[in-house]
Length: 376
Image (cartoon, rainbow, N blue to C red):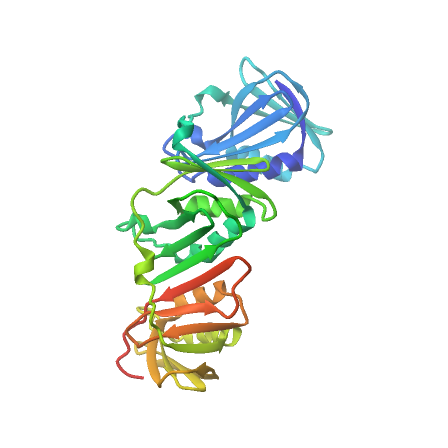
């Protein structure tokens, strides 16, 4: 086999598929990338058995067809250092010796028979699949707004991913770790189907880093996995098994008081005060009045404390409530509007965080459980 390809083009696709490969794999062959040459089309594949990412690109002057595997780290490191010009890859079909050449340089590697690479795809009857098309912008918005709230406790594996609750006219993305919850409803496209699945964190990050925001993605759902097809990439990932908690039951419907604050001013103040929190709980106490918000933090172990005040607009009675500084920073980094509405009921019930204006086709709601405050 033989083919020519621009070095930086090949590097871009190899770097993309390498995001699937784990640092430690159960099978040694998974440390490799599979190359499959058919005509003038080269498909590059990497897998960790749970997730499989393929990229297809065009090559010139192809000779022969076949499959071979190359150590992922070695080929990635080499391509990264090559100059931006055309390279020729020649594979000996008998012993799989690989020669990579370009004007002024030659590199030799040893490949592995591509037929040894494990196939992770199961053939699923079309009657058991559902297909819809969505803008990649919709998918990425759902992931960006919810990924930080995904749980990390293996005791609750169903919370270690993002729920996609798909309705004919919208997609709802949900993530929670018990302390915080994010629900993002997006009506940018109408899937025309109804179903749900839990997307794990690793494939969510791969989708963020590989797919372009301005393209369409075809999503195929089967009983165990989802396949994302867009442009030059084909990504298959397994679902998390189990049922996601009923998120609608925990969202308050009767929080009568609204606190309106400047996002940037509040975020910067919490960051400063957060330096002085007790690292064991991260508690920041808030005293809210009609026109002023006072925040305090204290670390009794080191006899340090902090206090700041800022203007606000609050339509309820004076209230003292506590929240984790770390969770507040995550929420205020994710919501990007100029002002944020915080809907409250009392110091024991969760607060709802809402942007002052919702994005086009989107509806974002964040929920945060308060912490116990004995005094201010």
